[in-house]
Length: 111
Image 1 (cartoon, helix red, strand yellow):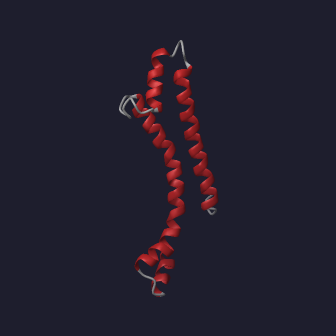
Image 2: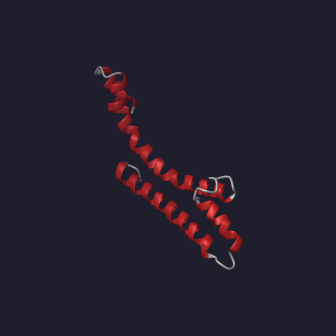
Image 3: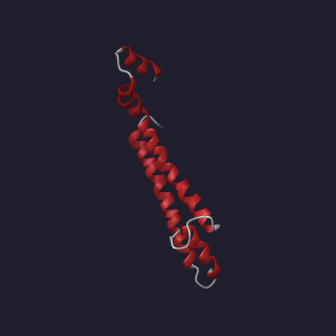
């Protein structure tokens, strides 16, 4: 796209107007899709840290900490650990599907 930007500069468009009117519209859809796809990894990282005890402190509800607490009674009350695990799975899958759908809408040239 450098020819496109060079043509805009030759027309006298400079600085913030070039950034806001020509560069940002090219980058914003990719950034939005990337953010949606990265949220699944962020959720998994936060849950993993919470499971190891490195996440939010006890008054805060945290999925990884809920799974760690449920591991103590996993054989008698398996649903205590399974419920937050299922929610983590559903949330991660939802953000991946959202990112994939956004990519189809915002970047139609992408295969």
